[in-house]
Length: 289
Image (cartoon, rainbow, N blue to C red; front, side):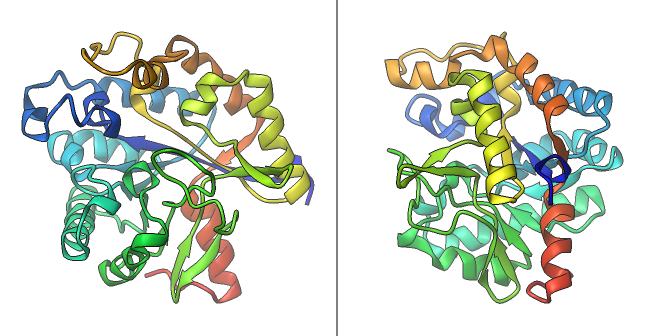
């Protein structure tokens, strides 16, 4: 398969700026309702951008957000995008007990399906927080009725990562796919090449080259991810955060929208379920319900 014919998965983690894990010590969960919410405005911008490029995507959405912006959720589905789960309250899977994790992912699925009228098949753990110490999370996902997860980032990072895990989609439990975040393998290690802060930090040409190498060298679709707040230059600045956190969160936000537009021009994009579930269903690995 030629690299130019490969369709990559475009994914958006639908959360607001004040829900970022790095801000948790500064903005308490009990104070979320007092923050200025900007997610609806930012999702409107992203939906318009996708419509301009005739592109579909997967929106991993918090249940907490969906409850407060049900019409936004319906718009995502009505415009032909996939609605998936980011859990309910943006709690890291690694910080929860097995029982609490199941309650969180089950509640989010029920809320999203009730609001949208469509099955929710996919899940992404906040901060890619499924790893070697909590693989029981996959059993919970099976119990809750999910068909795939995109929760493992096969890199070394100070907050997450499972560098020895497979780089591409695989059946992690019977009937459940894990679709890892995309990395480029070089010099004996995995390099992040799929969005987030790395996409804002690195020169766009380098990000484009890395994704092109995955398509052309590995002959595999990439998974790109971003957040609505990453295009929002007017979001309130959070006081008291460290220099590292400030840099990671705000670096090149003013360039993000332009880079996203260019990315949509340079590669083919689609929904996670269409790219991966249809492929694995044909092979008999996953049964979609």
